[in-house]
Length: 434
Image (cartoon, rainbow, N blue to C red; front, side, top):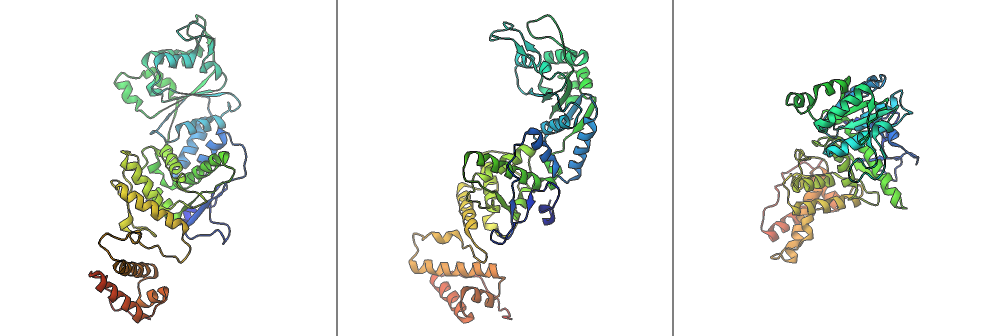
């Protein structure tokens, strides 16, 4: 999917993707992400932001669904792939609900031992089990009057499901090691990336518990279904990375990204969805400093590096012909470490060039073992002429003007380079000089 350039600089109430503000900073194809004034931002503000600038149909539907379920005090089940923002949706529901001023407690149930899940949910009395050296209030009691968010509810052991069912149905819980019940008025928001109906069919999840959790339901869409939302998410994560770095550095950093790099990020497959995109942005910012932009070569380099380490998150990156990149420097998922070094060097060169500069092939940095200085000079001339031809559009006159040569002098350099290297140069057809 190709995102139109207009979408990258879309202006909205909370837009953070804007063109450069003055000519001194301006560079073609580079987008700056301005940070807002330094203010303390809690989880609620951050949650509101990650939904605020998204414009896709799926994002609008998710906002409408959040608004719908937040108006009712019923239990809610949120489904969706991992990393699609189920936790963020739950926090946003709490922010919009009538219980906004009451507690919001969270528990990730994934891979927790049975006893630990019970202890966290219902609490325990001192001496209830080995290591229980004090009384402990469970999350049901702490969330009394508010909302309890149970993430990855499908991973809860069957025995705990039975106790959870009673707590939800009767609104009463009993701490481990006690015999009396405590009333708790708690609204449950549960989330899962697993297929609960299939688990019910296989006997791994209680159907009656499912019915009590799924009074209201909503689903979070995967990132591949709403690529239009990637640019504002990139802006948010760049700003988040900037704020994190500013906490430890006295010198503030401002991150920017080239338009082509952003377009490539919009084409990447993200099985990890929002979480995978956030991690990728943080990885990219670790390579840049001194306010240099994130280039497309750097994005290609990082994606290829991640794939080479056996990652599957970015294995479907499409390699395409983009401005400022050529097929020789494109990176496939199986690119070797030598290619990584080439891209890292090229990314560095792109960060220091000015308008009108031409980047020459990196192979000119090598004087080959069997090569004389005269042969290297001839090769450097040929590569310089080829680079100038690609940069200026290809006519003999434009290349000669760019190199400060006459047309006849340019032809002479080509012929001498060909004799010295004993190899054929590109064939330049006779073109009109007008």
